[in-house]
Picture 1 (cartoon, rainbow, N blue to C red):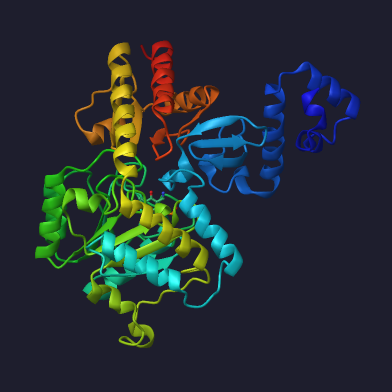
Picture 2 (cartoon, protein in one colour):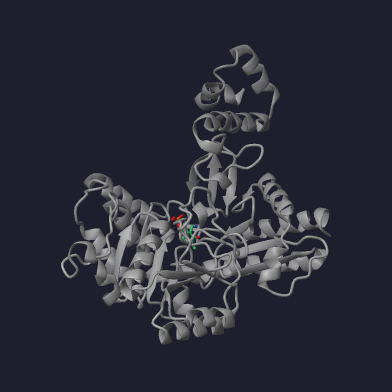
Length: 461
Ligand code: PMP
């Protein structure tokens, strides 16, 4: 009868007569009820939110669980089930949920107002902090999401170079602005969404994955404003080759093309300076998001060379000669304050050896599980991020491209659900990968490895 006094349960079953509810509560261990609450929420959601979820991939079959609380490495659903969270707010959390530094900033800001709507000291402090941690960033400006940052970066690149075309790589995801939302989930194709302006991608060049000679050839035409790059593409977690990145940097410099590094996911994840520090590459512009505000608040930022960033300075470039930036919530004190405190933790840096070590334990463990079971799968990743790719029978994998073209989507979904049944939340049902954060533990990592080994044995071994 433990659940009888629980207002959450009773409330969510209020359409059921009390006597049948109570006998059902008595007769179950709770797992049935667990499903019912989330199921009911999802049914209600589908009536008022298209597809039932604000991000489609958060709604899996037959219905997703609804989160209620998050702390450290754990996520609790509305029924009180606790999961080890590797989804980690779409990779935004690096410090884990509710890190004390971020909580302290939030509490302080509670007393002062979250959004003052005027200039505030925290945007200055956060800007100084990012410029200190990421040397290629001489000036920076803030907005509310990675996508917004990308939108601003594209305009800066076009205004600076006076060229219209922009380039991205196949499979690269850079938010969902129309010009870049193409070929994000596969080889060169059309728009990845309905409703685009049919001309929106007229000036977008999609470069073949990992193909240095084709990319150099395209850049050497000298008509590209910028090339978008993720040194460690977060969507499929196959790190770029250092030589390849260096080559791109060189050709972009030789042709006055801006190299824009998208560090929305990778920024502050493996070290305070981002992947650009590890690759030894100096981009012209960098976009940030996610971990910049401690992973807890909406944020985006674009930063880079002063002479490019200054195109946003309306004092120097009046009216429509400047690159317009807007956003009611841009630079809001809550996100900026939390971001400042989070970046102080990143700067101190002692979290990284632990996090990266855990990530490496996971990568090795997953590889071991595949070897042991002879499963047709591959592991890719970098430090605190890992992905397991299940391959279709008979697939021949020779490189990243053939790997990504051989993925068994149904097996991914099955794996995601299997992990859920073991209390492990990977991100996402399609393309399950793992974001390791500071509060994760060896035991939690080992639980993923163990569950994966069991899954491989029974499904692919
Ligand atoms: N760039 C990359 C590499 C991303 O993975 C994402 C989203 N995950 C974005 C940009 C867009 O960021 P946001 O979701 O904050 O708009």
